[in-house]
Image (cartoon, rainbow, N blue to C red):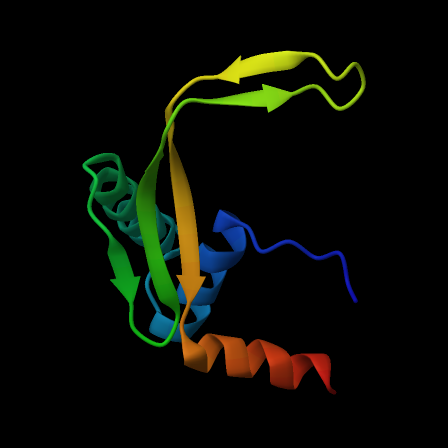
Length: 100
């Protein structure tokens, strides 16, 4: 399996090729979409992208953790975490890619 990572630049280049906007307009469009997604998540909203998946923010309570090296108990503060649930179509597509 390759170690390639899809970047913002790759996305804006794909928009440039597929849509025909200028490179600057493509980069702005990608930035705007990512900003809308992150702003919604910061506000506590879920972001559902059809046929792709759902991003949501979950609150985790405080708990006691353990340092695996020393066994010492360490308090873990409450926090908000980002979760992603892929759609069934995305799961099937990834699974089909694993078999090729």
